[in-house]
Length: 179
Image (cartoon, rainbow, N blue to C red; front, top):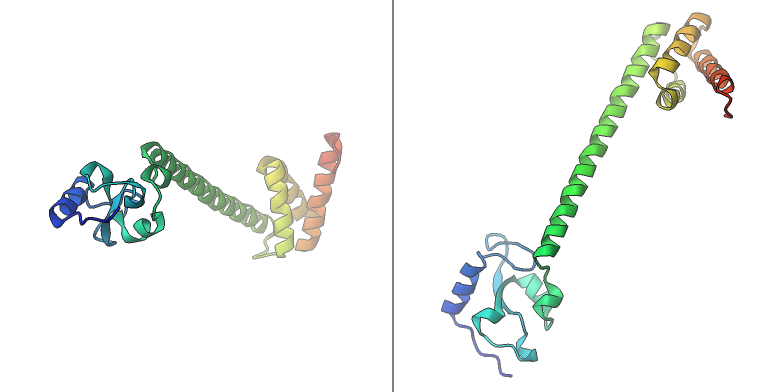
């Protein structure tokens, strides 16, 4: 079928009906060039009837080519599902950010507690990582007394780490568990 021009008035009417927004991707005329697209392509027997026309941005229209609209464009339930998935992803990302932030705050508090107990301004990073892993596994209420005892009985941070590790082994054995 020979392509017939839609005319400026009909094109503007379709753009206005669709709020100057691409029906495929949602981009608007202020960010992308818009065109008129045929729901049923001319090559498949479509017409220039208003009910067969939609607003499309150039990239979407070129990508769609001779495919029918129902095969290419997301419908309202697809848009809602995608929006819901995006919201869920954003909430998950925020939870992860808060968890990482909370973990950093908890680690900092553990390191400050070790420094307070030992009087050291800092200590070996591996010792700190090991003790923090015990705090994550058993909680502050279990591990802090180990740190206090270790600080009373040792003179350097690596010995502190070994003492706390010994407390952990004893604790696990008392609980009847294996390491």
